[in-house]
Image (tube, rainbow, N blue to C red; front, side, top):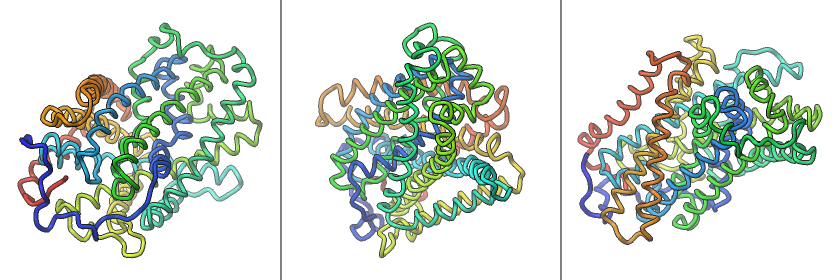
Length: 482
């Protein structure tokens, strides 16, 4: 791959300039970006989904410590990522950084991996949203309809919000996020005031024996998957106020908020159930343990609220990833990679309306294919697409870390050695460990006992996406990513 020999940004080629008239409009502050990014992480969905699975199939009562490890590694990654932000004055997140550090071919490859990962995850979460909403409606005496009917209703709402100005999505996500965080914090408070549950407060989070018990690697895998989306703060650069300050602040606040919330709430869930019983309960009822625990501490009303907010949490997650994917398409089109009309913002809303519709089209095709093929929406559709996304995002984190180190090896005016080299190098080491853990557990993640067609298929798709970078770079020499 080609490496730039100069740190100075190259001027855009004719026809690819990111002119003011083609920029997205918005005035997102730190809080607005934080709401969008944290909503993508789906806090309630994580506490009700990956956390029970991490407890059941990972390291039991020691699982909450996996969030501490993941947070620490991602904070190290963020040091270099945010330090480089002021040298990357374009919205584009991963691929702009990879392009700046490792060259245009690698940058385009990273862009295609990112787009594949985000579109796959957006489509896959509909496989959770549809059945969850169907179950909720039926529980209140509503009609029993196929999961895809409810997924289609959610899809229509996502298309509507994605077409409008980002600030509307930000407000909707803020309301949904505050509601889901509030109910989990209410459960946390109830467990604390009850003295820590039937066995007191769990000691698993600080016990080496518990932390290393079972399959700690699998626990770390679920912890890593719970953070997907935090890195997308830079995607909203064009719509942010004072992005050189807003983006780094939003990145750190999002990461610390997500990590702290997951660590605290997973520890208190273990405590609320009881350290000696939590593995058994999580294994037997991974999908309902959060609701039953909430009912035990907050009554039937609390259980009903959790059931409702779990559905809205999934919707918020889908909407957040749709906003991210739309902006990837918009930015790539504005730089001559995709068709130019996709880079035209809406005259009234200043939104990437056409790019949003393009993203929606891909997601619609994937969901329709799942229905026609008769795939189970959770066990097959969500799991397979989630496998693509999880591997893809972690690989992008690794590529970005390498790009940061390569860039600052040439650029000495970026801050202290800690920010330019030491922290990014430590973060890269941790991320490489995460890649090894994910690859080791990928078959289980996509529902296979060992490496088979789906595991190899996930890897093949990602390799092809990255390999498309050099091909497109040659085919479109005028395309410039930064």
